[in-house]
Length: 154
Image (cartoon, rainbow, N blue to C red; front, side, top):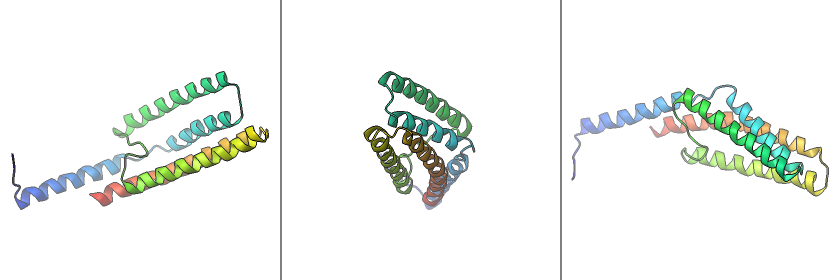
C-alpha cells in the first residue's frame, strides 16, 4: 500500500523527528558521578586483571564489576529514560567509542607486559589508574559527541 504525503504533512513529520531527536539529546545529560564510577569499575577490573591474581579472585572481581555495571546502567536509565551503548549512536560517536576501546586495550596490554610479563606488580595499579582516568575523561567527551550528533542529524 502506497501513501502520499502532502508537503505540509512531510514538513510536520520532519519537525516531529527533529523535536524527538532534540528531546533525546536534552535527556542525555549524564550525572556528574556516572563517568567517575564507570572509570573506577573499569580501572579496578583492569588493575586486578593485570596484577596476575589467582583465577578465583579474578572471577570474584568480575562479578563485582558486572553488578556495578548493572547498577550504573539501571540508575542512568531511570534518570534519562533512555540508554545508548557506546556503539549505538552515529558514525562520530561510534568512532569515539572505538578509539576509547582501542586505547583502553592498549593501556591494558602494556600494563600486562610490565606487571605480569616482567613481574613488576605495582604497575598494575598504575595501569588501572590510567584506564580509570581515560574512561572518565572520554565519557564526558563522548556525551558531548553524542548530543551534538543527535542535534546535527535532526
